[in-house]
View 1 (tube, rainbow, N blue to C red):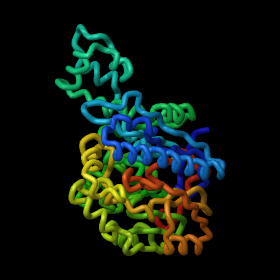
View 2: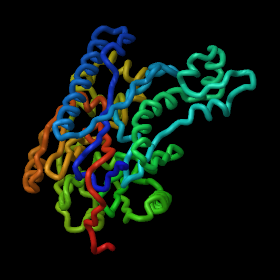
View 3: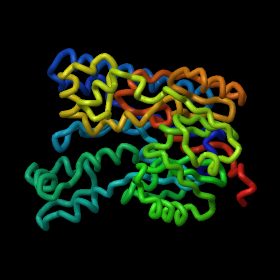
Length: 379
C-alpha cells in the first residue's frame, strides 16, 4: 500500500530525521578553541536528533535518516550535511516530490571527451585520473557539491519507490515546490511564496497545473512558510505576524499571533548580522573572529537565512492531540491546551547555527488518514 499525506495533523507513521557530521569531521580546523566549539556542536546536535527520534518512536513512528557525504570536500568547500530533509522532499497525497535531484551520469556524459572512461556516479568519478576530474570541475563546472548533496537522500527515495508511490522531480526549479512552503489541509493546499516580490502568475499557473484536483492558495510568506505560520489543528493557526489573507484562506479560524518573537528581540544576533548578513548565529561567539572566519570561509553554504526562522511557529504535529516543539511559549501552549493538544518539548540546542526548526529537520512521508474537506462551502 502506498504512503500518503493528506493532512499534516493526521497520525504520523513514517518520518525522515536529518543527520549531521560526527565530531571527528572537524579535525581539519586548526584553531583549538574553534575546533572544540564545532566538536561540541556536533556531539550535542546528534544527541538532540536522538531525542527527536526517541519521541517519535514513542508514538510508533518509523524513522528514516539520510546518508552522510562519501566525500566531504569539493570545489574549495566542505559539503553540507543533510540537516533539513524537508527542503528536499514532500509527500502530497500519494505523490512524492523529489524537490532536488541530480543525474550525475547524464551530466558527465554531456562533457565527456571520447577518450575518457565512462562514469555512472560520483564514486566512480572520484576514481578517475586527476586531470579529468580537474577539467570537469574547472573547465566544465561540474558541480560535485550538488552531485553529492542530492545523493544523500537516494536511499529514502528508493524506499518511497519501493512502497509504490509515484515520484516526481522539480529539480529544474525547486523554488516552485519546497516542503517548507506547503501546508496540506485536505482538499486545500497552501503554498508560501519564496519572496514577497515573487512572480505569482507563474507560481499559480504551476500549482494549478500540477494539483488540478485540489483547491490551491498562495500565502505571501516571503520565505519558508513554516517559519511564518503553522495550522496546528482544524480551526487554529499559530502565526508570527498578521498575514492579511488569513481571513480569505482560513475563514473563521482562530489565529494566535506571537508579538515580540522576531529576531529584533535578540540584540546579539544583530551585532553578528552586520558581519554574516543574518545567515547564522552561535550565541556567545558573536565577536569571535576565528569562528566567523571559519564559517564564512569554509561553511558558508551550510547555513540558510536564519533571520527568517522563528522556532515557536516551526512545529511537527505527531497526531491530532500531540505536537513537537523546540521550546516553551506561553501563548502557544495556552492555545494548544484550549484545543486539547499536548506539546512535547524536544531541545535542539544549536538551531540558531543550523537554521532549522523541528519542522525543517524532519519530513513526514506517511500519515494515516484520507483526504478531508475542511471548507465544504468552497466545493
